[in-house]
Length: 255
Image 1 (cartoon, rainbow, N blue to C red):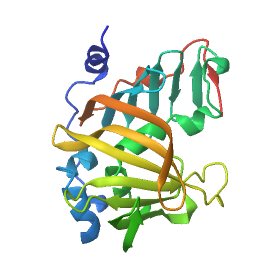
Image 2: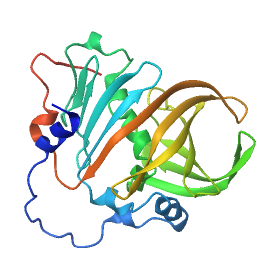
Image 3: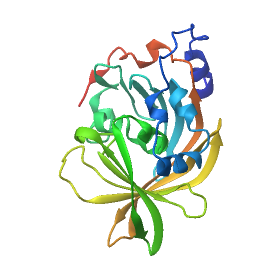
Image 4: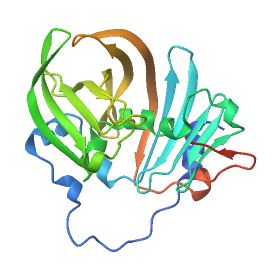
């Protein structure tokens, strides 16, 4: 069965009418400097309205593929990959068929890594995030308007609790994201860079087709660490089927 077919089968029918919120979603209340960036990435309110997010991804260095499915309301995740399946069922992180099938250091670290990268800047609308304007940052010899996104209380969004957003002065879109991995060490200051390229429209939101990770040296991007490409991006208002996130028989829990 194709990935698109699986997604369609997993979508629950029309959601029953729910009680309306007493007021507007707090995530819609963003500072003007951040709204300007969000507006350059399409109808960003659709991210806040959505319940489910999915995409296909290819590691360009190894040509290994992955399909990601996320429940945006509660953080549950499923990844179908070449060599493994992994997920978060809301209580535990699991890996199948066994821990040895996953080549990385931590399944928990990995399970929402690329979904975080792909969903920037939309994911930074979370109420736990504060976005402020910084002085222009010179990177690779070019000055970029820069925003800083910090999570309250040292919490993490993906691998970090702080991101610098370097904005293309011509398009107003995200050009680079600079961050330090604080997942393993909250005091880590070694920055890495993500280059966002080849933006495509996906249902009114703008996502990069390619993200490239670089080492940073003296405010310049140096050696490429990895490159991933994305396709089949879906953002929908329906919930995914509960069974999609359940730990398969024979799977094991992992850190």
